[in-house]
Length: 279
Length: 217
Ligand SMILES: Nc1ncnc2c1ncn2[C@@H]1O[C@H](COP(=O)(O)OP(=O)(O)OP(=O)(O)O)[C@@H](O)[C@H]1O
Ligand SMILES: [Mg+2]
Image (cartoon, rainbow over all chains, first blue to last red):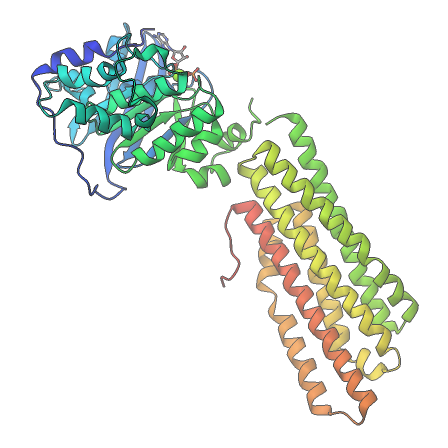
């Protein structure tokens, strides 16, 4: 399986694209669908990893994907910005509609799509460059012509990292702690001014304090962005997400408001999973 | 969650049910002391209060411990919440039953007040409601919990009639005034017990459905 460790490929082709203005200050009300997944089936060769899943992701909310290992969470997440394009043998059927456009249609440019839909990975993966360059790099490639210092500061502030790094922006990012690196990766993703942030277990390599910071951050990011989060940590899903989707063997078993799913799930399988009485 | 937790939760649930049985027994004895005019029994009932208080605190501690250590969700969370709330209602019911026993001691010499038909009936109905609530709780029986919830008006009617009777009879002297107040207090405490027993039924509904039905018709 190929996981894009660095988003160079996804950015290079977007150089010609203009940076869009900052996210509007008064977001449209939550409840509007920003990503609509319709009857999505994803196969690796003969094996169906995601089976006929339909799911709406609402703007300015955090949606959590939970389920046992191998149930297809990462596969589904990667489909939302077409990261699965890099996986040989991977075939997608059904539709994903982002802001009214079907992203698997031939006319849709995946590179442009990934600018709108950013991704943060499980393991922090900063470039071996300075803190500043980590944030500015993608924006520069995208032809950002505004005040780069201001953009870097804004994104680092947004990621809750500014105070810790403002005096050492020229230092190499690899010297940061794991939690700081992860926030840097979030800042880097924000520099592309995406609408949606996809996060695949963003805290699994972090200690409880760093985890709490990322969780707070996710909560704040919701005012301007939409977050889709894969997590193995049920408490985390319960804490940070507005809606939670439970996947089992590639099928979407149940999607509910998070507080409902964690107090009174409808499906016995969800009940068994969240209470740890599985199998 | 681990098997260990499942076992702890099951132990706690059974402990809560034992407490419910204890409280039920206290109410039954308080009613018997009242209706048969048995001051010795009334005194024995009153002594049982301490045991309930101590058990209430222990159950509550265990609920808090399990919430803190295991952060349960779904049915486990609902069960712990129900245990905590039922626990509180059981302790209140025991308090009210003790009050009934206290008044029963005073009413020994006033059979008119302690054995009239309405009061007998009220004792009977309230004991029944508590028994059915505790049974619904033990069996997590949604249907009977719902039935209990809709049957609460009988108690209100009986209570209203008792108050009316006492008021219309009027007192004939200081002793009879005291007896009337005791009888009123007995009726009031029994009526409260029915309310708490109905709360237990509502907790059973929450346990089964996740719905909070309190304050709804
Ligand atoms: N590149 C691939 N080629 C073939 N099979 C794959 C590939 N990637 C994933 N799979 C299979 O697809 C299924 C879903 O994988 P996926 O990574 O989406 O699961 P997951 O829910 O994210 O699991 P985890 O919680 O362990 O990360 C698994 O059975 C996995 O083995
Ligand atoms: Mg995964």
